[in-house]
Image (cartoon, rainbow, N blue to C red; front, side):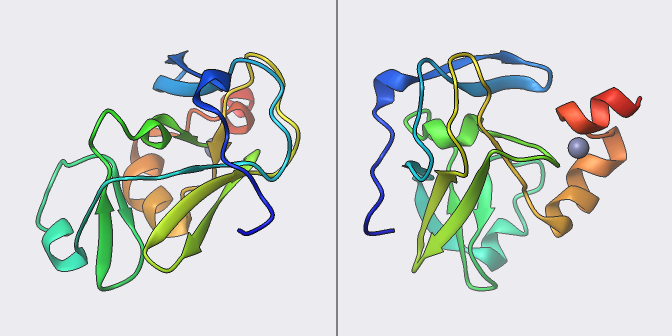
Amino acid sequence: MRRTKPIPKKLLRVKRSKSGLGLFADDTIAPGMYIEYTGTLISTKKANTMHGARYLFEINKVWTINGSSRNNLARYINHSCTPNCESVLDGTHVYIKTLQELHQSEELVYDYGEEYFEEFIQPNGCNCAKCFQRK
Ligand SMILES: [Zn+2]
């Protein structure tokens, strides 16, 4: 994470997307830039009892980030099966990093992972661009 830079907030905009709100590029964003998924560190054990809670990012079996604060812009980033960002773990910090150059009005998306997908996304059907085409 050392040679990369945070995405300036003025380059990001929360807008309506196919799956509720999403986070979009408001200008060109270089590959390798990141936004931190911020929030309160809670135990994964506690997180597993918070049924219906959204914006929980499980770091490992011990720690989970409760990212429900509105200051956590990264919480608006939706899942996609063809992501243009990836989540990177650094200790108990989580960064969502761009995998390619993003252009104005492009939605930031990353792969939420198999476990989350099977539990929360698959039952309602995935709304990402790839899955949406197939419907
Ligand atoms: Zn999908």
